[in-house]
Amino acid sequence: MKKIIVTGGSGFIGSNLVNFLIEKNFFVINIDKLTYASNKYKNKIKNKKNYKFYKLDINNRKKLTKIIKENKPVAIFNLAA
Image (cartoon, rainbow, N blue to C red; front, top):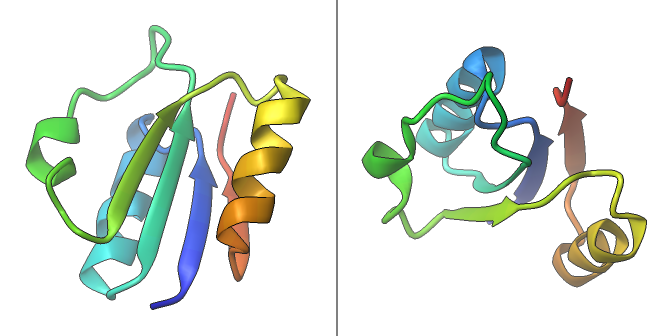
């Protein structure tokens, strides 16, 4: 299963993209800081086998690099504000 990282995946556009990619059978890694613009949709998808969520600020370069190296995604969508 191909992996895709979506930063800002809990926002309005990001959450719709995450849902679309899950339906298309991608493994989606959602990285979001969860600020005021976050969509609380996680309950619908948090138990999916092809979904992983990280509460993380993308300015944390060390942790972000670690996630990318561990997962080796085929694509990264940056939708973080």
